[in-house]
Amino acid sequence: MADDTEEEKIAAAAVEAKVEEREARERELTTTERALTEGERAVVIDHSKLSALAVYSIILREGEEEMHRPKTSLWWSGVAAGLGICTSVLMVGVIRAALGPEHPYLGLWQALGYTFGFVLVILCRLQLFTENTITVILPFLAKPTREGLFDIGRLWGIVFAANMTGTFFTAALAVHGGILSPEVLGAILDISHHVASFTWSEALLRGIPSGFFIAALVWMLPSAKGSELLLIIMFTWLIAAGDFTHVVAGSNEIFVLVFNGELNIVTALIGHILPMFLGNVIGGTGLFAMLAYAQVHEEI
Image 1 (spheres, rainbow, N blue to C red):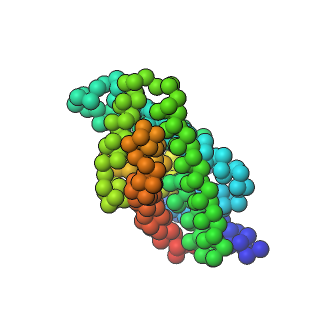
Image 2 (cartoon, one colour; image 1 turned 120 degrees about the horizontal axis):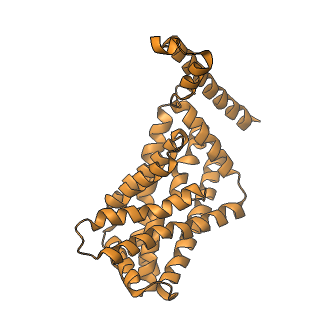
Image 3 (cartoon, one colour; image 1 turned 60 degrees about the horizontal axis):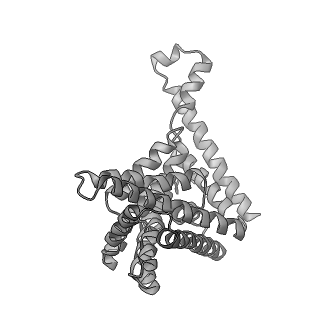
C-alpha cells in the first residue's frame, strides 16, 4: 500500500505540473494565438514540451514495471538484447571490410554501422543493461529501501548475465560458425584488437561518457514524438565516433578474441569487461540518473 501511495503522489504531481504548464501557457498567449479558435489553441498547448517531472514520472513507471517482471522474462529479453546488440559489431566489420582500413573517413562510417544494434535492441524493447542504469534507479531514489536495493541487484544481475550470454554465443558463432567471410571476420578482429588495447583505466574512463549518453537517450525518448530513430542513431553514433566503450557491445568484441585463442576468459572478464561495466554504471547512474533526479526532487 505504501508503494502505491508513493506512486500515486508522484503521478498526481506530474499531472498537476502539466496542468500548471497549460494554465501558464494559456495566460501567456501571444496576439496571434488569441486569434486562434479554442481547439487550435489546445493543439498549440499540447505540442509544448514535456516537463522534467512528466518525463521522470514516465521513466519511473517503466522502472517499476521492469522491477516486477518475472525472472524468465527478464532473462530471455536480456539474451535477445545480447544477440541483437552484436549487429553493431557485425555492421562495423562489414563497413570496414568494404571500405578498407586506409579509407580517410573510415571511423565516421564505422560509427554509423555501430548504431544498427542499438536501434534493433531499443525499438524492440529488449533488456539492455545500460538502459537499466537509469530506469530502475529512479524508483529507488524516490523511495530508497533495502528491498529496493535488492530488487535493483536482482534485475541488474539477471539482465547483465543474459546480455553476456547473448554476446558470448554470438562471438562463438562469428569465429567458429563459418557464417562470415574472411574479410568481415578479419575486420571484426581488427576492431576487437583495438578495444582490447585499452588499459584498465582507459576502458573505465571511456565507459563513463557511454553510460551518460545511453541514460540521456532513455530520458529523451519520451519527448521524442516521432524522432526516436534519429535520437538513437545520433547518440550511439557519437559513442562509436568518440571511441568510447560500451560494456555489452564491447563484450562481444572481447569474446571474439577469446574464441580466437588470443585472450583467456578471466583476463577478458576482469581486465576488459569489468572496467567497461564500472564506467557505464558511473556515467549512467552516478552522473545522469543522480542529476535527473536532483532536478525534480523539490517538485516531487
